[in-house]
Image 1 (tube, rainbow, N blue to C red):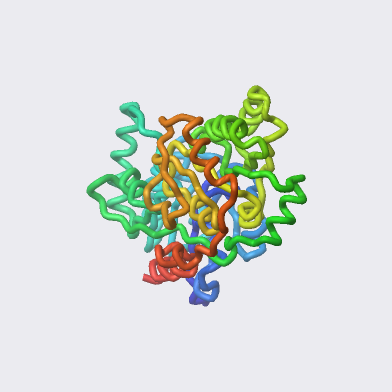
Image 2 (cartoon, rainbow, N blue to C red; image 1 turned 120 degrees about the horizontal axis):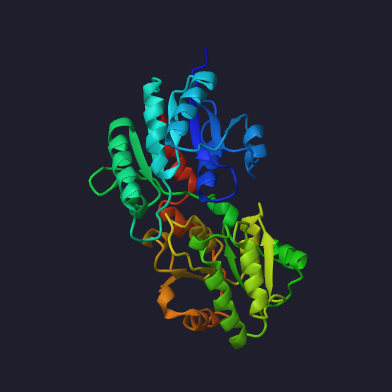
Length: 365
């Protein structure tokens, strides 16, 4: 019998994004002589990472998207029965992780891990949702053996103020993101760019990512810096809305919608500044990737403070408005040196080699 520990990671989807990327990084970088991984995703959609996961000898299990909490509970128990046994069930799915871990414990799984990756926009919550959160926090206390978070804000949001948790930084492959002049030239040639000042953003097109505001900022920036372009990387439910908005503002020819890309590190080298106007984030790992690429990053102050790992990142309030953001960004249009920031990022604990060792110790503990 193999001595490897079998780990079921419940992720919901395997599309490119912060949460699935973290889950995939454990597969890519942990010692595979010690750990085998399965993924549980909801629905029939084949995510961007699924083929890679299969190539890395992971079993990707699809179940019908749960219609309610009881269906999720039954689904988890069925998966463990039919695909287990598992040594660890590791859930990344925000509050519903409480249901996942309750089901896992009821089926005898010895180690259950909940990982908080996000927060939500501050707003008044309905009574039923508040009650659900309260119950889930009780279940986290009762059924989780480890509670992890990508930031203090994310941990407090999901687990509450009284339940202890451990912050595990979302590490990046630092060397991969170091500014690369050759990659810059290749990407710019592919996109039809020459000497333009390129303002970029990478992220799923969703309300939280606030690309509509980013487009407004670029509209103002383009008036100040006529030789400028915007590069937006990602897909999502609001992409068509963003494309229509750029057309409405008369800047559709200056905004490149590049879609989902697997070469984000090279794409960042092709940019000249990064705009990160999210309304909320669990951490905002793409902000750290941008700094690793030596990019000046203008970031919403709604993003957790841990994202600032170098002096390249500047916080700004969304309430200041698009014109004020554009003024700050325009200060860098004449150019600046793209420095190797890898040592600073390592010193802040965001090197994937460091975080992988932490996760291996958690899995083995």
